[in-house]
Length: 77
Image (cartoon, rainbow, N blue to C red; front, side, top):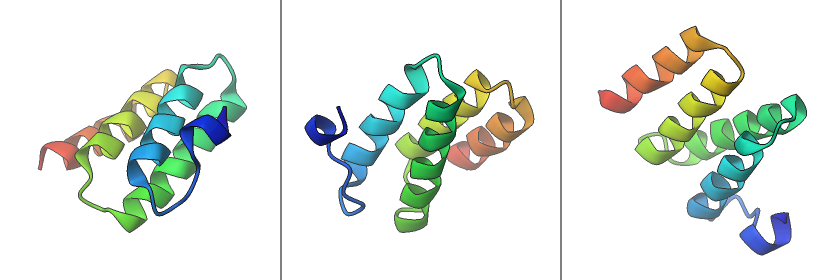
C-alpha cells in the first residue's frame, strides 16, 4: 500500500494520503504511525491545514480530544 501511495518526505500530498489510510485502520500502531508522519509533514510545511485536519482526526480516533482540539485551533488560526 505504501508503494502505491508513496512515502517520500518531499511529497506532502502523499504523506497526508498515507496518514489518512493509516488513520482509518482499526489498529493503534497505524494511528501512531499516522501521527508520526503528520508531525514530520508539518515540520516541512508548518502551515498545511490539510495535514493539521488529518492529524486532528487521528487524535480524535485515538480519543485524545485535547490534542485534537489544539491541532484544530491551530488550523483555524
